[in-house]
Image (cartoon, rainbow, N blue to C red; front, top):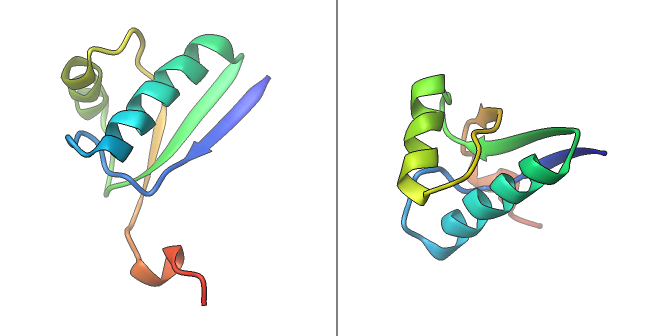
Length: 77
């Protein structure tokens, strides 16, 4: 199974929605054949991803694509 998870959170953060995004990404990464998370942020280097794994105590690291935050992108009009 292939999963692409999109979240408007930037990691790491202590907000509940960011914790959720990190934990659900960790679980999907363990369950899926291919997994990629798309998160707000300029870039997610290997070092930043490892920082996220350590910050949340995750079991795995997973590929992350960073996207620029645009307020209108997330509003329904």
